[in-house]
Structure formats: structure tokens, C-alpha cells
Image (tube, rainbow over all chains, first blue to last red):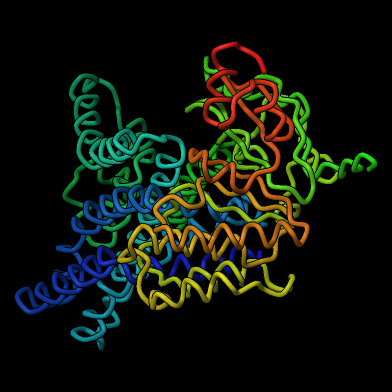
Length: 263
Length: 245
């Protein structure tokens, strides 16, 4: 445990000074700020930010994460030659990646909200959900990045895998769902689609956020089924739980590979 | 004159085997590294030198066999590494940390242990590089930092992989003097290098690996005697040609 915090301390130093994390923070900040200046009220800004959070956060997390782990490769070897257990080193490495990215996200989105829309209690719910979704997506996709970069020694493979996974979750998956819906349209599909949605973290984030607003009513019968499931607090807790599982599983796998790996 | 008593082995490899897929990196290696001596680890590229070193450091998990350190078998724990200093070949440090921070971090990790040997650290600091990010340092300066870290914790076993690579002749001399001094203090040194002159200068014992198997292990002078060659390079070539020592 103490080893983990010591490793973490310096990993944080290192990542915080990396230009990429800074650019990410500034980008999110400027974007949110500009949306406030042009769009006006906070609810609209949250909706506009929805797609940013759902697409940009996973992309940055998985790509930056993979590159970070590859970049730390030689130093990881040096640390492994020190009196340090692999488990604590792994935890330090993951937190050293996930915490700065999560912090960058929270600061980049949160600070403009504090500046522009502080006195709006109606906004707290949607904003909290936006931040929670982004935070969980950061955890999920940094965990995936750890798994890829530790599993594959070849950088091209790891980075390719990272982009592929992002593409699959962000774009291809919805296409597959649409295909399923058209192919089996004579069957009642609400439940299968619900189940399919639960598998993709980006979709989960989207549902979580859309249901904060009344747009679910526009989705017809399916929307009603979704509303009935996800709209309840039990449903919301389920979604958050599934997202946590989606972060934990790749992380446990990565830890397993890391402990057995030959460097 | 009586024959000197052989010192207890600091490291003993017993039937150590490692395969990477179809490639046999180590094939039942049985060899000892004697306490308080400089042992050279040599062999052609891909002979298994790095794999042997990495097994000793716990970076690579052997498929079979044992490694004993001062008589105790390594069991997957990490505490034994407290006594080891390691200089990897061509190290890379976190880009955004300064040399001082890297050293502080490693000190932090080993807190509460033996007082530090800062001689090489001061040597590194003399180049004025202590507070600059590691990424802007030249290869040679980085290698000095690498050396400073390996010697810092007064290890009882030093593992040096191409220690003078990238160093200018003066720096290389300083490092070699340091290696000799710690050896005289009883530190065991395992040295891998492609520079034969350097090995002849520093090493007393030799482990010669070819295709993952030990071709010769013993005093450096013994290899020259057996092959009848005066130079280490030619002696090794003769062994490779004959297929045995």
C-alpha cells in the first residue's frame, strides 16, 4: 500500500506535467466556456456536452492511456528491479494514469459551470450525471488501455486495438444494434436491445444522460421501456454498477497479465 | 602457497530454463556467480544473457529450475531485491521528471534502508543535470544517472548491463574505477558487455553463454589457457569454433 502511494506520487508528477493532459483540460474548458457564451442556459450546455463526453472522453482515455503505459515501459522495468511488488506497482501505474485524466475532465467541464451557472439548483442533477458518466467512462477506457498496452508488446498492435475498441463502442456498436432491429423487426426487441445496450459503456453513458431530460419521450415505445428500466433509481444504480464492472473486469485482467508477464 | 578457499557463491542458477514460444532462451543453465568477484556474462547476441539477468531480477519468470541467492531460493517474493543494484541497458526514465526526482522516488521506495552511496550521484550532479527533465539529457548523462541509481543503495550484488555504453572515455574510466572499488569492498558484480577490453580489465570470472547453454564458466584466465589464445575475443571465437571449451 505504501509502495503504491510512493509510485503514484511520482507517476502523478510525471503525467501532470505532460502536455497532452494539459491540452485536454484546456480543450474541455474552452469548449464548455464557449457553449455557455453562445448557448446560454446550463441545461442546453449539458446536452451539447453529451456527445463530447461520450466520444472524446473514451477516445482520449484509451489512446492517451495506451501511449502512457508504453512510454512508461522501460521505467516500469527499472521499478520492477527495485524491491517493489508487482501488485502495488500495477495499482500505482493505473491510478497515476486514471486520476490525472479524471481530474482533467472534472476541472475542464466543472470550472466553467461554476463560473457561469452557479446559482441553478435545477442543473445540479444533470451536471452531476454528466460528470459521473465522464468519470466512469474515463475509468473504463483507461482500464482497457492498461490491458491492451500490457498484453501486447507491439505498440502498433496496442494502439491499433485501442482505436478499434473506441470505434467499435462509439460507432460500430450502434450500427449493429440497428441491424439487429431491422433484421428482427417482427419480434418484440425491447428487452434484447436493452440487454445489448448494457454491454456498451458509451451507450450506457448516453442512456444515463438522456434520461435526465424528457427526451426519452421522443423515443416511442422503446423509449418507454428504457424509461421504465433506466428511469428508476434502481435502474440508474444498475447502470452505474454495470459501468463499474466494465472498468473492473479489464483492470483485473490487466493485473493478471502484468503479474505473469516477462519483461 | 595453499590454494585459496573458494568463496561461497552469491548467486547460483540451478537447471534454469526459459522458453519464449518456440525459442529456447535458457536451456537448463547450471552456473554460479562467486561472492566478491566481478563475473563477466558474455555470449553472442541472443545467447540468453539478458534473459538470465532478468530471471535473477524477477523480471522474467523461468519455466523451470531455481535461483539461489546466498543459499536461499527465490520464491517470487520481492524483498531480496533490496540487496541488488541494477543498471539496465539503455534505460528510459519518465520524460517529465528531473534526475533529482527520479532519485528521490527510488529513495522513497527503499526508505529506511542502508545509507546511500552518493559518490556517483555527485558525479552525475557535476554535469549540472540534476534539475533538468531527463528527456533533455544526452545519452551519456542519462547513463551516469543510471549508474548513480544502481550504486546508490550500497547493494551487495550489482548487475550491470553494458555499463559504459554511451560514456566518454573519462566517464567510462570513472565508472570502472568505482566498480573495482566496490568489488574490493566485497560486492559481487555481474557484468554483461560487448567490450572485450573492458571485460579483461575488470572481470575475474567468466560465464560464456551460447544458445541458452553455458559453454564455459570459470576464471577468465582459465579460458585463455585452455584455448591457448592470448586475447579474450580470440579465446571466445576458438570456443565457438570448437563447440566446447
